[in-house]
Length: 479
Image (cartoon, rainbow, N blue to C red; front, side):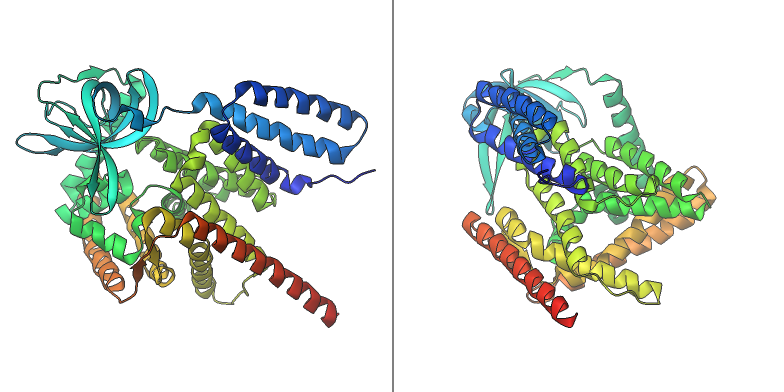
């Protein structure tokens, strides 16, 4: 009997790889007929070879089946290129996704463009609203002009709305109304209990309202290499889940109940912050990896990563082409591979164990995502490993205190001292971040080319393979 290509322990990972490859094929070769034919052909051969117990061939065609599925799944979800609508006036359907900055003659905000002249579009743009009628978290249909603008070295899409455009407000549904009401309610709690600086900080890192931060405050995050804390994505969701779990454990709730409660709160939080793609992706990944703890079974982490990837790409296959998706999955992949190849030695002191895990996690992730960060954002962070060791525990503490404030906000006697603690911690966090970011060579401006990214990862793969061979030979010699 011929052996199977992949074991059940890695099945999901290989299927994720095939599904991903299919989406790429669907992007570059958008032919529904070809991939539908390939799907039927591979499904037929899987049935034939399985019946004959030719598992090698059935596995090959299972991979081809998932490749064709990926392509077929992507094709209906592909969007028109927004560049075809530059210049002239068009009819836009958009959602206001940031708090408008008010001016005498116009308001400015970030919006998610959903349609242009009835064509499906998925594009974020900066809106210059001279009508001054559009408000936060509402959907509108409006006549406007799209262009490309530049600030510094960054290009972005700008949507210009004339003063006489008369935007038409669209219904947002029950969830949209609930989300809007809850967001304003949380913003009011924070504003009434915190100083202005702390209010801007918490609103940004907790609710994703980055538009409230000043340029100086944003530059502190950028210089220290911790801009990822401003985006409600992978690392942010992990830290939020940790904070929630810690709070529930303090209440003497059992482990599995803590896990369920933190998962429920996490998905509610993801929906509350707009259910944007990075948040949803990170929540799905956390839920899948938490499954092994909940069922008390040791699941293969590659299998869990593959399952999370398939679920994410089923939700939206176009996520594959975003920097956030690539960075999130490469970060988790690097942790799994590196900790398997280079397991850390345990200390008797628990604090030292946590510290070394934090150090090596930051080191592995930084090394693996450095070329992609440089390619997408034009910057290489040299000291981010050390900065994260100091700032991530500090940031987690701030999140824990913030959740505590929200829980006790109706009780003024308890909320006031908690607010005082939070308003003390946040300026201190800024000071530490500023000091770390001001160190010379903390980061350098450099942009990898796509060829350089490819060479970097090929070099890493060759190095890992050679190292594995060397370690295997050494272990055999020792025996």
